[in-house]
Each structure stands twice: as C-alpha cells, then as structure tokens.
Length: 148
Image: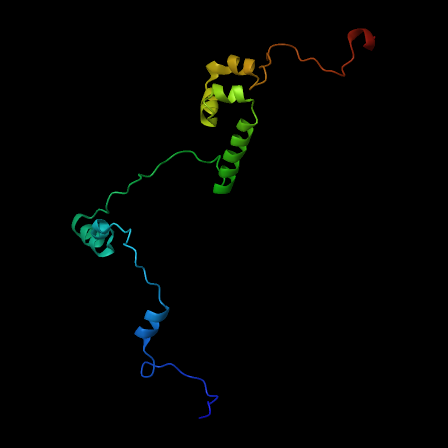
C-alpha cells in the first residue's frame, strides 16, 4: 500500500494524549524533596481565607529594613566592590592578613574605628594624617632668597 503525502492531523479522536505523555514525559522515580507539611501554609486559598478573617497577611520571615542606601547604586556595583575589597585584602602580606584572622570584614571593622588609626598607620594600612595647622609647603614655590 502506498503512503499518502497528506499530513497527519492530531485530534482528540485519533490521538491518545495520555499515551503520548507517558511515552515522552518526565518520570520522577525518586522520593520528593518537597516538605508536604508546609502545603497548607503556602496555599493561596488558605492565605486569603486567613486574611479575610484577620485582615492581616501572615508574618514574613524577614521584616522590612529601612536605612540610607544611597551609596549603593545597584547589585552589580555592590558585588564588584566586595570582590575588589577581597582582592585588595588578599594582596596584603600573609602576616598582616593573619593579624585579622584572614577575614576582610575584621580589617574593615578595625579601620572603621578611629581609635585604631595610629596602629593602622604603623601597619602601613593608612597614610599618616597630615596636620591641618602646619603650613603647606609647595614644591615649586620660590624661596624668599630666590624671589628677591
């Protein structure tokens, strides 16, 4: 018998969708990792029923935080700054990193405390603070004997 060139159209009357699904579908034989005892807490119908009764939504695990975050422009910039801080910390000598338990956060906390400034200058982490009352010396300024 010759094969016809007409395309096969699948309809509910000539195609078993359940059999096709069983043949090509994903079969998960392993036990589920979903924690079923939370299903009622996550069901939107139960959440709305509770809201209709109490007028309050369920407690959120993290409460909203307020603060001045104007210095942080976006997520990528924040991550880039963290990576740069870690790279700079890792560029320090091993003895100096060990002084801060090999943790950049300990170094940042140390540097944030103004009482540690003199020790940070001794360690070479900060440049010595210049006295604002001392007269500024210009390198290219003529001396009084040269100007006369």
